Image 1 (cartoon, rainbow, N blue to C red):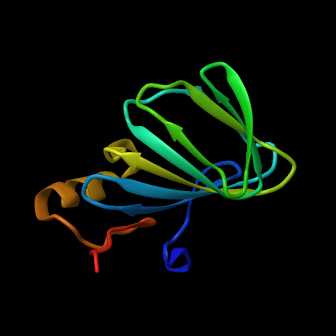
Image 2: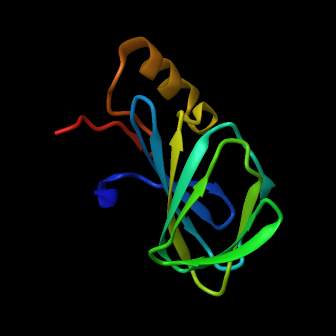
Length: 129
């Protein structure tokens, strides 16, 4: 399924694909070795699934190494950050509610005005089967 979702370069060494539903979103990130995401927090609940590679996470001042197959849960407002280790990392972040700041303005406006639709720039809403 991810093969049909366009990727967007969001920062040096980070590409993101997004699938957006009505109340949650999935972001598949491909991160180059040694990329660092600074410690931060947000009101969104987050689950992260490591698809490939190894990542050093900082979660509330505690370090943890995660690797392919690991699933992490970040409750709302928990401080966290990550450093990719020696290899390319592919991970999936799932957020609820939707992180509107990740969406292009037109996509956000369309979602609110007309409901589910296929959108541009790596965001695709899919209907349930």
